[in-house]
Image (cartoon, rainbow, N blue to C red; front, top):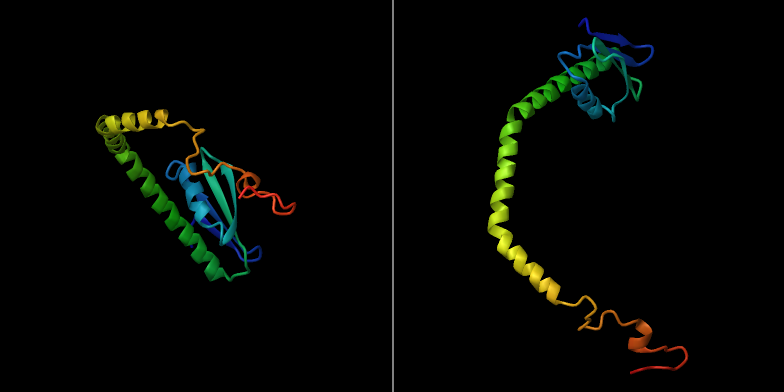
Length: 150
């Protein structure tokens, strides 16, 4: 069995030892989040030396299934670790694209926004041409007492 995985069938749990230099804490949190439906999780240890993840299955399962959950957790660590590395590599490109979109969009649509603001300022918010703001009693009268405007 892997040296960083220990299965305790009596407690229905698996202990996974992770090196935080390889998998930072945010990657471990991301991988752990995926397992919230399957298991109860506990993170322990020194975040600079070793992090121990205790996964306790929510339902009683056998040793092979516990081992499978542990290996799935390790796969999630790799997946989120890769995602983080790619995200860091592409961060500058994303920022440049976003800045370009925001700056380009502001220049082209600026005239449209200004004209819309001018139209809105001309309208009075108290105007009610369709009679929507008139209370029910004023519009249709009080039918109980026989008073009616119409």
